[in-house]
Image 1: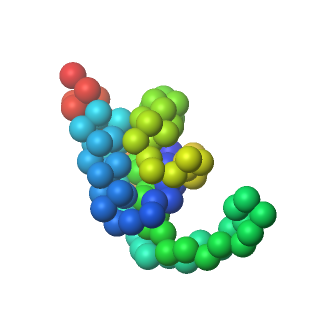
Image 2: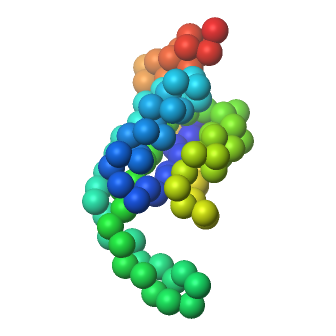
Length: 105
């Protein structure tokens, strides 16, 4: 199991990406947190912006396709898409795999 961490400029963008990935059967669940404050350098300046964090729960095999899908629809020219390895309890992992497999049929 992995978590995919994606930052977004608004709650609506995060919701749209989550629904897109659910519709493509690439994730089983998504959580949105925010706003969070992100501080980062960009083109020689330091920025401080409110962002919304989207955390998607899925399997390792789907990460490449998730990156591709997010890069195609995300409004940022350089979106943050980070894979985090995770372990889950057996019942949850079985549910997660079942949702992805069931919906990809």
